[in-house]
Amino acid sequence: MENQEFKKIVEAILVGDVEKTKALTQEILNEGVSPHDVIEKGLMEGMNLVGDKFENREYFLPDLLVAAEAVKRATEIIKPHLKGERGRGTVVIGTVSGDIHDLGKNLVASTLEASGFRVVDLGVDVPPQRFVNAVKEEKANIVAISALITTTMLGMKDIIEAMVKDGIRKEVKVMVGGAPLDEEFARKIGADRYARSSRDATRKAVELVNG
Image: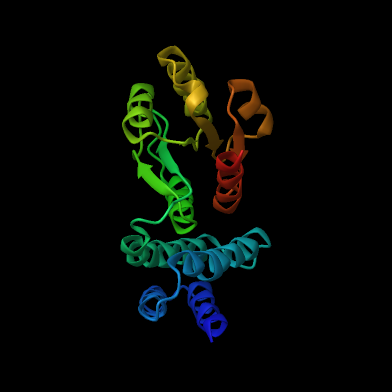
């Protein structure tokens, strides 16, 4: 019976039905199903399929956005049920100073939350010191940094250097992403991981916290 209910949630996400996704999530939680199972077998499964369709060009950006919104709203319903349960860790996420783009960041934040991470979203145009302060205040496991334009991507190196200077770099993993980036750039600036999509970011975040 549970498998059928998970399947309904996945189908609602695939068609971008936000209200139905929320309603189905609430129903299955009311039945006593583990919130982590709802996240893994419902929300994440749906978002993974959407990601596959987007990468295969069966879905386009509007499809991705509405699916992400459905997952985000369902995640808000699940959050109270996760209190007292062990999460995967805390991620501080933000877009570098000088960059006001937040589409990719928001998708990553929603997907990370849906997979059990606590996400602290600093927003856009975030200076290095604010990342440093947030890592210390939130006891973050991971810092996720986004940049969408080539003129701001070098700001990622400034953030990493600020963490080194403050003495906290060894305490936190750094993941970077954004259209102009690649693996080589991530290595060059001293990041731990490069993520090319929200799905990839979630997979790599799990790798980082699991060691």
